[in-house]
Length: 496
Image (cartoon, helix red, strand yellow):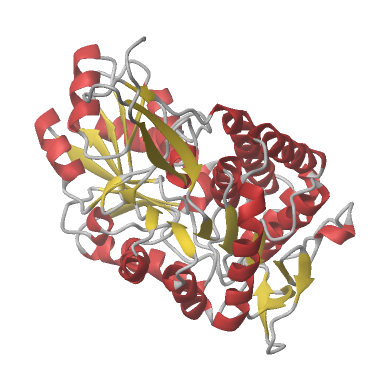
């Protein structure tokens, strides 16, 4: 498979180091790890393999920067974020190139991610000057009560590879707006996008020590434990799997940190037979399922279609999927790229093989696309799915759509809620009463009604159950990085 990675317009944005206290540094050991293009397997470059000691230096830098940064006028922090936002927009093509290169998603998708990622800096630049406290009527004569919202302190941020830009801006934006300093552990699969963002932070005038980027692959557990147990880190925000979230939560309990977790999903997508526009439901399901080749935490994982329209929906759904082009993200006309690594391919294949062995029918796909490379899997549509198949209970995180038939509203809501996690859920219906009933009944943090795409900087992002807690984006996102302090004034006498 031949394609050319377009050269960066600004070569200085490709950085093979970590960023600590305003400087680009190597690991003290000199060790590095390799980063490979998931489409070709070719080496992109290397980054420092940070250790616990390296990470502690970054935490120390954030600690030393915090006292001054927390007193920065909120309007000045807003201007910093706004400058960072504008630099992202000005360098959008290069950032998109880096995302596609190390993550594999098509260039068009990468460009969309850059705009989405930048929007968090813009949004929280507007939230920074609006961190309001309250005045509260006291129940004690002569007292007055007010509240202040103050930055929590040094924040440890741990982000995943599926959105190399957006996952980090969604956390750093509100943290800086609140007046916090950060140590961000970037994913070993996709460190270069975050490094480019750090360089843009430097150009935006973010003071040294306020933003620190630590890189690691093999040492990720060691670095993560340092962040979650260090007494100077007062807040940890993590996006990733539920199992890792449980481990980090246990570690964070050692110092009683403020935490927010955005963990795994197993999103139900329901299509009722009262839907007026079946093609719109098909398009919504396809967009939700196959975005980033199925590698998002809010992807539709279980698609439930009411029996009366099941066959027609399946036919139209499969036809739409057959029209996509699988390939390297830089190739012309490619709509879907590889999964991130061979472990992801094997999990996808395991889910398909399990479903077929239990009676599922393959309408399209169902095989590894080895002719394209080791990390490609055909976009797959399976019908006649049932609750005993792995897809029903495990998040696939890959390009497999399993279509489950159902009969009644109560039945499908029960099936949708039969999951330990509850991040996102979707359904299509034209019945207003049903829309309210089902939206209220689904045990998830986010619901898409007659749409398959719900990500929006203005909307609170987060889940319930074992999908975690806390919200990112929206007016609520900044609260995760603030603490409320009450101040009581006594001895205020009546007018003399």
